Length: 327
Ligand SMILES: Nc1ncnc2c1ncn2[C@@H]1O[C@H](COP(=O)(O)OP(=O)(O)O)[C@@H](O)[C@H]1O
Ligand SMILES: [Mg+2]
Image (cartoon, rainbow, N blue to C red; front, side, top):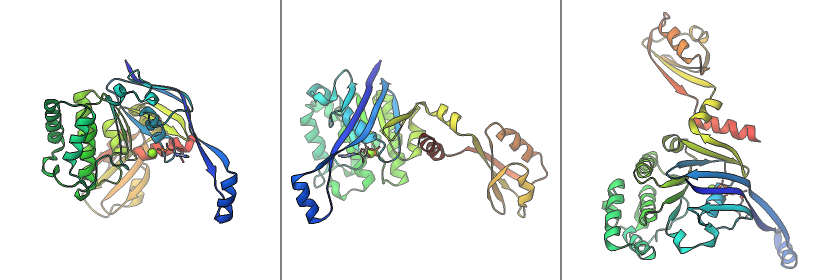
């Protein structure tokens, strides 16, 4: 069953050109030139129950605009969006109680209060019963291991701690649909991983439908089987992440470590393109299909091979290819 349905959705922002300087300000007081920025153009997709979809694209691609429309913050200029059968822009209370939006760059928690106070405010807003509140809170606090700092003023917390509290606040009312816009932005790698692990467990256990945007490919690789890629307001790819990788990743990287030193570059060159070379290790780029046979050839050569690991070209590179080709 599809939970999110987006059909031929477009959004234009109206804005006014302002000329520089006082003269310009005066002039624009009487006459302002209206301009249109077309943020998303005729996009369509549908997302089924329990899916965790990665929504990717460079800055300005239209990701936040799309999530804001799905959350009812913005009206679409054309086309339609429905979530759980609701039209988000109608802002019906019954819809408000069934989704959540978390934006990495915006705080919902009140910064000079402890997170617990904000949780209690949300309990009232969403009409959560005492027993439900306690049960859900205990569960979320346990999953995140944040019990020790719920009574400290939010502004004294680290960015990672704060983001965990933001997620808890957003999930107290057990939304069926969860929109996450760059939840891990600016976090250190440990906090990023904590949040990733949390989202993975949460999605598996609760079957919440999630759309996640992130600039960190590690987030996407760990969490999303499906990705939708948007570029310049247009959908460039919608499908399985592993198909995307198969389609675009044409190379594998073999990292070879040697037990002795003094390996010569020219001894390695015949195995493939050298990406990196040092006294006792090197990285060789091969086509996807050749990776195994090259590894076997290396092992059976006279070189003092200690270990070989085979890796993929990075997902960042893949995404860059796609944006490049889309242009
Ligand atoms: N309030 C606004 N007024 C005018 N243009 C906007 C506004 N908000 C966003 N845009 C433009 O719409 C496009 C899409 O922005 P956005 O949805 O924020 O992209 P993303 O989240 O993918 O970085 C960008 O070109 C951006 O400059
Ligand atoms: Mg954005």
